[in-house]
Length: 218
Image (cartoon, rainbow, N blue to C red; front, top):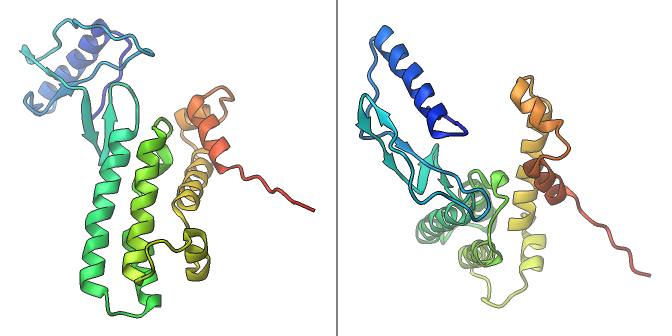
């Protein structure tokens, strides 16, 4: 469960409601596994935060936390989550190379699309450095070449075109478009409000990512 509040007093009020609900329903929250995070407003963040307690026990403050497999940081940057996906990609790619190195190219490409092109929660990445993104893209290209036993310096664009597979840019663009379509078609009031908000930074980023430019040269 996640609670969002604009201030410490508001968070304490929400926790009070949770404590009453737990008592009335015979539940008990684990204070050791409960954490709180203070999100930065630009570059500003209070260095000292009043203690937040659950069952009169202080809750630990964290600066990054993995929630549903996605790493959330107090700076709202996605570099750590992108690095997490890059490491997971490396492990899966090495496993495919060692176990299925002698299969046909068609089988290898299918395995790559299934196990190495998932990029969990990549459609939510909006704030990351070019270095982090380039590292992920390079790792994916290396994995593709290693499994198909292609030369190290072969063209990545030609490689994906001949294999009928998507590059990292194309994968993330498609997943972002899919998420944007689901948010716009959702009947949930909060999601509908976000989708219809023209000044929402997340929606703006998703729309700009899904737009493609067609340049015709004569």
